[in-house]
Length: 445
Ligand code: ATP
Image (cartoon, rainbow, N blue to C red; front, side):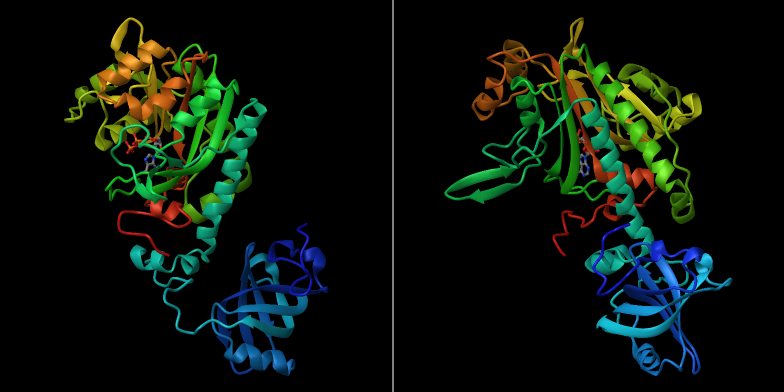
């Protein structure tokens, strides 16, 4: 039971049950729907938990006169008795004795909360009024699920003895590539917003933290208008020491996903089925995997080719999602051993094939959700690889220093939360999975 201030409410809608029939309660929330007839007014109240029907009769004259004029989406406090009502949702309703408007809504809503006729309002308009869009119970559910999913992942990492870090997002130089980075004014000079916590989680390996994770903002100045890119998103990153190869990273990440998905399925499986019409599938272990070479061979057998040599196009990722489903009955698939040409300088190369890296991407339902690798921890090799990729060594001098005073073999991965939630719930776009979306053309609200 949540401790609450009883001035406005004694219960939340989720607390109501048939064992409380006959009791007087005070509830508070939004007027979801109001239907006024001459002798009876039905008011559907909505709070964080859901909906309940409230009935206002003329014998409670004051409440009746308030209910007659209250506008939809006003915030109200309702007092009344719980009664059984077979026809009402949940089998209960409130016979209202008093009704107080705490904050009246302008009766002209810019977007509806209760959409009519099956078609949702245009997304761009909904995003302009995101706080009203989020009042829809199925939108609130997205963030209830995200909260649990994130908690479950944290629990998993903490149980595996990972430490949480919070690395700075203001950087003195563009971190990895220089492209796709936001430059900001920083007193008398420029600073750059972090494109990933990559360098700082590796610093934690040099600092002897051994295993770390971070949940934090990631900034990407990519002019993408796809359904899976945002210019600012919440990333989950982790990094671990004393690994034998990238396979150790894949192993822990697939176990983390399976355990978090189990929690989501247990707690929200039914609601997800009801709201989004999909089954949450808890993935079996181990996840299937293909090397890039194997993946390309399978794709070319199906006549799916792309210009991206050694890398995967969105179409190829989609096809691999299909192949995983068909061949392995699995929603996830790891693609490993990307060519060095398409990976950053810090990915470790294969000892017997320096053109190939100890790296992976994880694809879920045909979309990339994770990039990971074993990192190069040997200073000389790391420096040589950076030079070979044309990096300016002075701009990464602080980073390279991490590897000069003893740093264990290590690896890790980066994940986009919004993308995972979008895929989990089959949402049409990352915009729907972001609390407030940031894109090339969207900086408000
Ligand atoms: P993509 O190829 O899809 O642009 P990427 O290869 O640039 O992704 P990484 O730099 O490897 O992505 O980032 C790791 C993870 O972060 C990705 O797998 C994805 O889940 C997420 N991610 C990357 N870019 C974005 C973005 N612009 N918006 C939302 N999530 C992103």
